[in-house]
Length: 578
Ligand code: PEP
Ligand code: MG
Image (cartoon, rainbow, N blue to C red):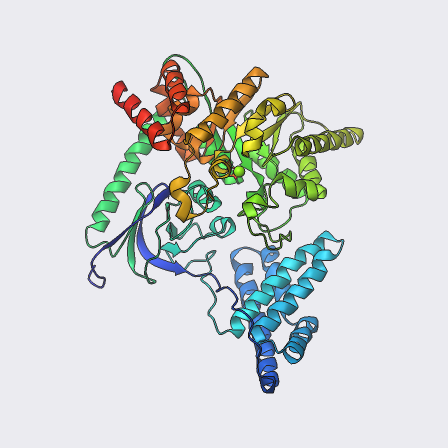
């Protein structure tokens, strides 16, 4: 590149396949708040004037945003921002912030944040779902105005990118990733993050290449970059050959897609006749449609929280979404997971406070049981949408039998309520458990006596078994779903379910890795559920193996000490086959 320097190659972890070539956009979210240093009381009126100016600035930004959004998305979305613009003018907010400046000697940004937090806490305590949800809006207004008071520029709007770009960031949240401007995002490179973080899960579903764990690096907007989500690297200033390399990659991908089409209608059956159900993971109606196109046998994991990350959906909205997903795959099994909130997915409509370890905190079924209205509404919507068909529902992060029984009882309660009201019911109802906490795997025989099926969430099961955060680049070397400790838990789960006459699937990202398919088949897993785009390669792997040999391999893998040992067994088995 004429303007750039020598190429800089950065190694990371491949997290979503594909390649991207284009200019960099460096994404920096608003800076965290600095500790509050008291102001000189003589500056009180100056600081109060900054409060007023910052709130006026926030109002102007929000009005502009409302106008833009009205044109791009529609009046309903725009209303969110016009309501926030009004909040910025609320004297309750400005008066309280001015008071904090005078009485507590807070600087303008801290005074605005504190006043907004107070108001949000009041709203969150009101017994009205609409007002409670406004708490997040007030906080958001406070953050925006505080940023303006500090004189910081607005972070890039990921929903509306200026043109085709490769986004580079420290990390992205799942909702930032889900809201990405799909028309313009070419690829994503992250300094931090892990390949099973929800940002990576979303990127894979969107078909956006992603490399994480790149470590610290210097890059600037507009700098040319070549990102490889298969190999896990990023080249800055890749030089004049980059375009030719990228064109070659595109041509190869086109040929592979043509070969996959031929595979679409063939069964996922081993050479010795064992069939595996290959299903797709979905988080949107578009994913479900893509799953149908990829030849999925159904949906093994519907991540319902992805449908509603930014707002709390009512029963009618949920029912419509579930109906649309059922319609995308007529006659197919769809496993609906109830809202899995918390961890790296705190929605704005619930107050999670500050948690030291969110993945070990208020998450999944724990949230749902503490907010029974949320779960009840979801179950009602699901049972209504599933009238006349088979409905599969499962709960995330089940840890204790008590939790499971309470959740199961809620399903029966809702079902009875609907029946009493004469509402058409599902023809069949199966209630299952996500096995993603080691306790659930260890007590699989106890759970198998009461649940109808298991789906193993290897993303979480791995992080909880190995005590390695799935989103932390620094411990990514410890995180392996084929660690023998994880394999033993999977084996135990499958065994217990089969003894009770039930099926077990895997719906974590590990299900979509074709190199690991012999392990899952050998351990007796009945269903593998993955990003739709991963189905052809896994199907090819299954059609090329014998279940008998896979069983032997899996038995050996269970007796190993390290993931590297298991990897070596897999490599040796592949070599013996060819
Ligand atoms: C898992 O934990 O493996 C899983 C499939 O659920 P999620 O990735 O949404 O936590
Ligand atoms: Mg999980």
